[in-house]
Amino acid sequence: MTRNLTVALALALPLTALAFEHSQIVWTPNDMPLDYSISNWVEDSLPVAPEGEDPYERQAVIAGHAAWRDAECAEFEVVEVPGVVDVIGDETLNTGAQRDGLNKVFFDDPAGALPGGVLGVSSTWPSSEQAFEQDGKIYIRAYDSDIVFNNDVDWATDEDIDAGVCSGEVSLQAVATHEIGHFWGLSHSCEEGDPCNDQDWLEATMFWTASSCDTSSSTINADDIAGITALYGPFATFTCSNELSPGDPDTLAFGIVPFELKCVMQSKDRQQVQSATWYWGDGEVSTEIDASHEYTEPGNYSINVCFVGENEACGEWQYCYTKTGYVRACGVPEAEFTFDHIDGTTYQLLNNTDVSVYGCIFDIQWDIFGPDSNDKVAEIQAWEPRYTFEEEGEYRVVLNVGGPAGTGAAELTIDVKNRRGEGYGACNSAGALGGLGLALLPALGALGLRRRRRR
Image (cartoon, rainbow, N blue to C red; front, top):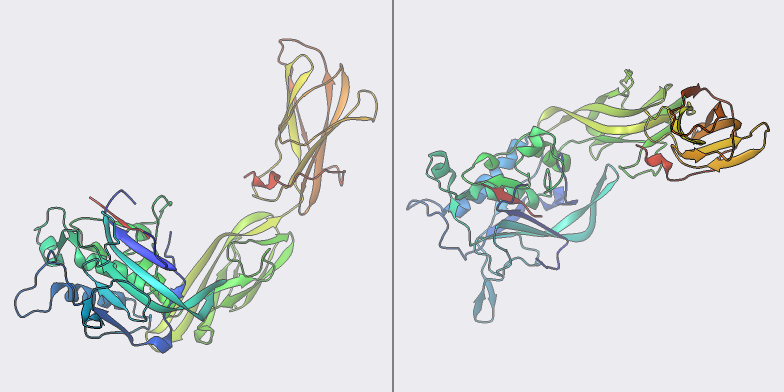
């Protein structure tokens, strides 16, 4: 749909849909308690509450907000105010989501903006004020957030669904809980088409799709709790001093072994953090809040750290945070190659250089000398070239493999014979020849909302 919105997050009916994600538009402590209201315009197809009870749509929204209180370390508060009636002159209007500084919930899609299959949409507008910075990302204070439910959906109560009285209807409370997650600043745990390799992500209320006749999304799970706590409760991550692009959470901490990595805890609640345990990925552990570690062996390492603190709302808390494959520790490449005879004077050069440490080889060059001289007859920049020698004779072949830690090299002598139709032996070469000349190949390092409802 087209709207002049910064964030529009939706829950939709099925097609068939990573840990928690944030919209980066959030409410601040100064906004609490946060007001919201339910529009007086109501769709007739909504479940009807028994006489004397609150309208079921109001019950669903109240229960949806209450579900997020299961994140007991997250501090936020919401208050319902009387329903919204928009009036211009003598005309009463049902305007739908708009940037007016009022947080509203609509159950009749007044603007007719929701296409078939979409259950609900949360639309959030940012202010011009920064709320905080977390893990290199800027979070902006929210100005207004409205929720619109589709009026072309068969809705059901959780009570009916749990009692087995359901034939394809959708839980209004489950959708309300999901959309309220967007209201507080959460995006989807997994988007359509994304890999979703953790059961907590699949079962999260904030998963992009869900099932008919299902009430599981009416409550929140561990991933939802982690997401809301990161916004409104104690949360800590870290950054390291030698990032390639400091402040960018997607960059790697890089070094040439041996090297010291210095890491600093980052948290909007830093004063609450009392201790930390760092797991560096190479078997070593540190216990300082801000810590450093020396890597001595090449490798790609993940860092996991668990922070412990104390919070007035929930007492002692622990938050563990992992950056997978975050450290790249490079050594000088160990060049090694073999060759196979193909036909005539054509040979296949086979590169056996160790590439187990991803990203530590940037450049490759084959130098061919001879025959019977030290004159270079060819330079080839390819991983495994096929080369046709001009004539028979003994050729010296040198493989140069370069990376940030330097250049490794190995050589073999190939006794080239013009043998048509014969496979002609192979030979192995390994070792380092020191700093040979190397032409650079800059690209070689690559070796290596809407939510829908499923039935």
